Amino acid sequence: EVISHVLQGDQYRQLTLIGFSLGGNLVLKYLGEPNSNRPAELCGGVAISPPCDLSGCCDRLNHPQNWIYQLRFLRSLQSKMVAKGDIVKQALGVDRLPRSRSVREFDHRFTAPLHGFDGAEDYYQQSSSKQYLAQINYPSLLISARDDPFLSASCFPGRDEVSNQLQLQYSRHGGHVSFMQKHPSGDYWAERRCVEFLRELPTN
Image (cartoon, one colour):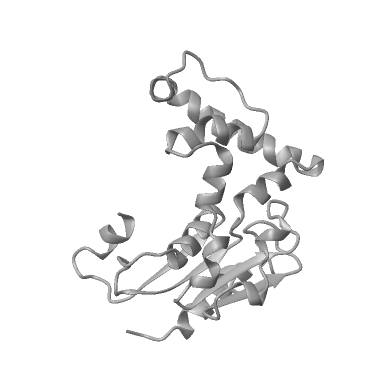
């Protein structure tokens, strides 16, 4: 729906998708999953720090050294549930909203049932882009940092696991969607690399 809205009015001849974190996972999934309705204007995509294996990332968040990240995520997610309390209670058929102790538990209680999935694992399996990386037929770029605290080892696929249309660029450092680097322009490294990649794409 978002892509269709952007392309209304024939303002754009080319469309490239760029996603950060979960948005990056969505970009890769969209580019690789079976879909005959992708627009002719689409010419490629970039994913920065994508959690392409959602289950693996939840396992990673459960590591003791990542407790502060998980706590922050949970507080944000649960505050959104509270803000929509009556709607969520009615949708789930419950009288109260129990607190969750992990992101996986939250997804099992709320995210999955609210979006038609049969539990957290079903949601992770169907929504992870990793299973589609070998089917991507558009020039694409995946940028991730080896020291990203959120990404599991399964989020760093090898060359033989992905399409030859997908470039893999793994840096030693960069954290999660950070990639800070001193540069005269003040730009972040990942954003500059993204622009370089887009300029290399063939024009329609």
